[in-house]
Length: 326
Length: 246
Ligand SMILES: Cc1cc2nc3c(=O)[nH]c(=O)nc-3n(C[C@H](O)[C@H](O)[C@H](O)COP(=O)(O)OP(=O)(O)OC[C@H]3O[C@@H](n4cnc5c(N)ncnc54)[C@H](O)[C@@H]3O)c2cc1C
Ligand SMILES: Cc1cc2nc3c(=O)[nH]c(=O)nc-3n(C[C@H](O)[C@H](O)[C@H](O)COP(=O)(O)OP(=O)(O)OC[C@H]3O[C@@H](n4cnc5c(N)ncnc54)[C@H](O)[C@@H]3O)c2cc1C
Image (cartoon, rainbow over all chains, first blue to last red; front, top):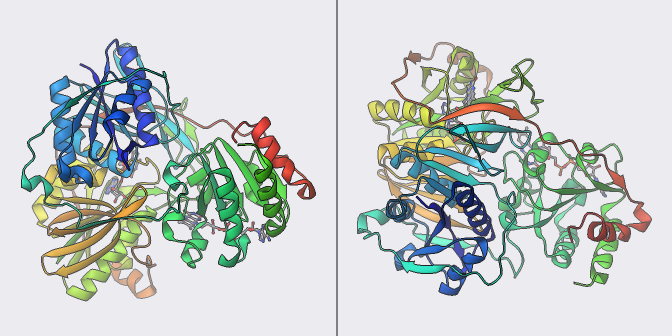
């Protein structure tokens, strides 16, 4: 009956979003009076798996099949279903990532389960109901949803759960084999290309994001955004028109039709704050807006603001950030 | 090539979101509905593929009669015909079951959707349909081309990178930018859309797996604290000492 958490690895380590899912899962397990088991796939160091004990995971099931290094939905589903069966799990927890949500959706069908994606809070369990809160209307609201099936599958929104860290606790690591067949890899990717981050931070995982809009005037000024991001340990992002005109790559575009981010700090430079942009960033914990127009709508959604020319303000911020002791 | 494009009917991106009846229901009052923006990418790419390779594009919506203006809009953009499953779309699982029933019956080569609905933000229907049909689902894809008559090549986004996938027909994919430049209807399209077939069918049985009980709104920000531009460095100190985010 343990709660099962699916954890994703990257470069041998466990992704931050998966540490959040593990923390979420272990809290659910505690509330249900059971333990939390993680299932890991792909390339993760055993020490990293054992360290999941810090997030309250008791046991990790690990399928080290080489073919699982790249994401193949059908194969992943099979491994997780096997783990769920072995653990008799009724609650499965994922990160609401492209991988987690995909596998979660397929498992919902296979296990006839209730799926809630984009979940922002721990479930409430009373009177026989199991109720989660999830983000809806692109950040403009939340919905409370009863998961009515026996099996409940939850995909946790990134950066909405505190990572628990009970230093020193370790999880036991056990091998798991799902006896995968060649046919489970029929839709395997031909090629996986990871972005060059130059040692920087990936946008979907970032705790701090520095984002530029049309007010940056042109790609020749982006070194300011990059430099500030580097000083703060942040990822860089942009508004839609900026990626449409090719100043920045598309995967940096945030908003309603781009990616949704919910970092602790979002710094918007020369972005007007159109409602479609806000939809992608409005669950950020702290929002800073730098805009030369005091009437820019973004100021209404901001916690801190500077009215001024980005090209003059940002260098001052870089200077001040350099002076911080890290 | 027979392509099925699933479209969701959603509040316009600029809508104010409110709830009525003790926060138990979404307030449709004054809300303009549009084709889900992501679905426009799926629709336009389907039309482009049809223009290049021949075939047909059918749009499908699971919804009540009030979604028909947007189904007509999809026909005006260039779909050939449409199906509306006449049902209140209770949740994603229910919708996926309806889409699967239509897709199985129609024998489509490709089932295209948007990445995510901008109202219920599920990001799930496409993968559910793929699983229900036992065919690959490639989501979210930002590039879709045919390699030959039976194979498509897609690029999908994963966190921190992309994957290049080749799949045999039939398959499911969900679209996101920059797959294509979404088209808008022209006058001729609007005229011909009126006479294109729109079939209304009854839902197959199918159950919802979740129950929406109430809604809430995020807390309002307490207001912006402005820092003088000449003293911009002060901001960094506030972010560390007051907001505690650095
Ligand atoms: C269906 C739909 C979906 C959309 N999806 C998205 C989306 O996902 N993401 C998104 O971002 N947009 C989206 N948009 C577009 C959105 O409506 C806005 O057009 C867009 O966000 C504006 O980008 P911007 O703020 O960079 O540019 P602008 O609106 O042009 O704003 C530039 C800002 O920079 C300021 N500025 C100018 N010069 C300076 C300077 N020297 N220093 C400081 N500030 C300066 C200006 O005062 C202005 O506020 C969508 C639109 C639609 C219709
Ligand atoms: C409480 C509640 C009330 C609702 N009320 C209404 C309503 O009054 N009117 C209404 O039209 N919808 C209504 N919906 C349905 C909703 O818009 C979705 O159809 C359904 O919930 C799936 O949403 P999702 O966010 O999980 O989809 P996602 O998984 O995010 O959608 C992915 C893609 O699936 C396709 N898709 C999704 N929904 C449909 C659909 N219905 N038909 C065809 N293709 C689709 C689209 O291509 C979409 O881009 C309601 C949903 C709920 C939960």
